[in-house]
Length: 200
Length: 190
Image (cartoon, rainbow over all chains, first blue to last red; front, side, top):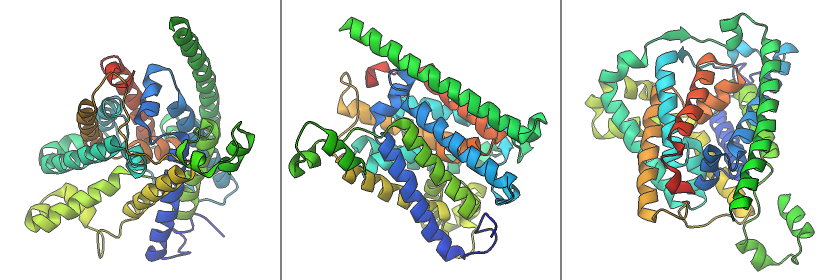
């Protein structure tokens, strides 16, 4: 048996939609477990008082990265069949900054706002409304934005292809970086807690 | 699982009313991260694709525009990309995944006693002020996610795990943008 299963024709499109709901349930479940339905917990990341966003995100990235790396090395997963979004550097940098502004202003990202809305938060619903209105605005403005949207194309590009370094070495580097970030996050939370305690 | 662990080790007797009203503490972030990572890995292995969120909203917007003004939608490459699928464009993988996200978030919230009609905000801002910022921030996210070809789910998580160049550039910019405005926005949160 080889993976990705869907790409090898193990099941059809209709079944893939059932898989979609099940994977979504897992996604939403763990987002809520982590506290990501709560804008205050998410925003605390940017005031160094609660670094949960960084810890959860990088643990998730490292877990999936290691899994997909080992499964591809043993030949179980054909990585060339796993979809890679093409890189367009400048619009992605601009979009990333805009998302960062939106994160600290609105308190959520698109996925976490769904979980927030599902657990009854009004700010989550209003955030979703904002997403809809501005995706519509983006669509209406697309003829003007199209050339920028397609600028600086680099194709489907991984860090291994870009740098010429071995895939395994980059995986190892990301793990080391994540462990360093976790240590810094734990230390930073302690410093902030001590400072808050000193004030009170 | 966590329900029993918390109530049995807690100082209070397991009480149906109290456990329904007192929200449980959130899961350890590293454990939640491993859970999230395994869901993402399952998506890679089973489907050959990652997670997403903003794409589902684009599908709904595109179908909405196509319903209200078919000719207008047909002449626009952005809507066209979401409408071009064979058959019903609403039979979209990401749309079904996001329906699951709502269900999974609700399920976890119910099990942990965290379903609550409220607005999350710091003590120094009014509800109306907070909702205005939520709308504004949501708008920036929607627009930015389209420009970047994905959001925190499709780019940062999915592309991050695949070592996608654009995704890592994107992720660094999200953190940079949020930290850059954090001081200005402090009254909303602290």
